[in-house]
Image (cartoon, rainbow, N blue to C red):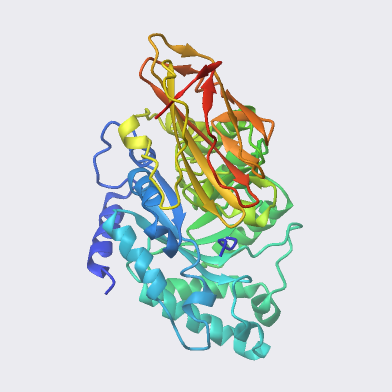
Amino acid sequence: MHTDQRPRKLAAITAVIASAALAGTMALARPAAAATSLKAAAEAKGKYFGTALVQSNLSNSALTAVANAQFDFMTPGNEMKWDTTEPSNGSYNFGPGDTLVNYAVAHSMRVRGHNLVWHSQLPSWVSSLPTNQVQAAMEAHITTEATHYKGQVYSWDVVNEPFNEDGSLRTDAFYNAMGSGYIADALRTAHAADPNAKLYLNDYNIEGENAKSNALYTLVQSLISQGVPINGIGLESHFILGQVPSTMQANMARFAALGLDVAVTELDDRITLPASSANLQQQAADYTTVVNDCLAVTRCVGVSQWGVGDADSWIPGTFPGQGAATMYDQNYQPKPAYNAALAALGGTTSTSSSTPTTPTTPSTSSSSSSPGGGACKVSDAVNAWNTGLTESITITNTGSSAVNGWQLVFTLASGQTITSGWNAAYSPSSGQVTATNASYDAAIPVGGSVNIGFQANHTGNTAAPASFSLNGQTCANG
């Protein structure tokens, strides 16, 4: 995958993996409860639902609350990559990876090893080796890392992103030294080090049938005919809104027909910001399609999202002006895509299990909304940094009748400009702003609340709005 914004418990993990192997299924031996979480609903279907974490995520209580409640599978974002695990020749550092593996064990998550061989995040010493030394270095690296984590990972992305878009193999250090045979050698070496781990090839833009996935299919046929150990294909699934390939299910099925597992390994669905309510509904439809495609193919073992929520997504840092790519917003509140994915899995939403409480951050300033609104109250929190901020706003109906359709009006401090928002449409982006309900949160029952929010740039003034009015009535400070 792409970069993030940039004493092991062996017995415990071995027991988890052994039980899964004994059962002969991807489902974990945990009760599915009422299927009010992604993981419970997926397990009821014999699948998993996973996420990616990096070590710094573990100190974010809002993020980990969602991860622990919703996901049963974890991919380390960076901590198992070559530049971390072997930064200099023969000098290994497994501390960061061990931290994430231990976390996964403590929270009943299986681990996807990511990754052993990749042209990116590759230390310069590897690329600088004479070609006649690259194979030995690659085999030593694979053997050492896979042996270190033997019995602790469910699967390995052995070779990551080996193809160009036209279906040719990348001319990286490994291809230049060994030709296309490096892939078979890498798989054999990994299997020798950890015979029980599932071995994958993982790439992006191979989700549908195209030149790149056709080339991978041909390669895999050749590997199988040679007796090379390979168990699965990872479809990264970094999508652009509304562009999930119509041939994704058929593509999964043809790899499955070769006797391979398939997995959606790094799902996200990026939107041009600010995201509108229509965008979020389309994103929900995209997530539904992906989940349904996996459910339709028996050997699709599960789906993993790349990151937990929009706040920790890699998308904005790599694709300026785009973001809102996950099922959870900047405050780790569920978006329509979450509800859609859960529904596709046959689950049902539950406030207690699917909606985490938005934490109060140290850099919070509260609004001074006018008192005495009667029909509404608003509480808000601003989390500011350098030239940016996020604001989370909770609107509560304190009236005697339900609200059906609403507009919340407030004035931003001078120098603040909204760049993206969630759960409402915002117009204009500065000055006096009107936030209009999304289709899915238009109704606020008596005593009920909705949470909306936005991200904004600022020029130094990070104050919250002085007052809010809902459908023309001034709201009390909540």
